[in-house]
Image (cartoon, rainbow, N blue to C red):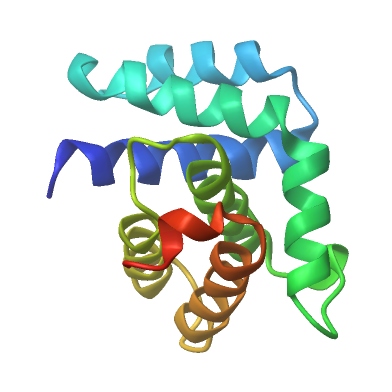
Length: 142
């Protein structure tokens, strides 16, 4: 498994914990590093994902809500919501990662950690976010 995928999985777990416990972001990050044997090499990218996602959560949630027709955020499984938030952050704010890569990674994580229907749902929402909110000149060739 790539170190980037490992970072995304740990970031998803941190976002899940932040959502459930409402603990401060930095406290959750610190507890993860202290209580688990996690390679130091994945920490910078993981931390960037978690901090970036939480700092932009209002905008990210608005985009997810607007794109996920007939689904309110509070009704989504928290694992799915955490994956969607993480991947939406990548799509909207991390220009060095192309949107199809972010979507594929989110789908693969959903296959392992969520319900059988989640990968299709996550793929659809993230593709809508890519089409509706990503710079159009960047999505034409992808």
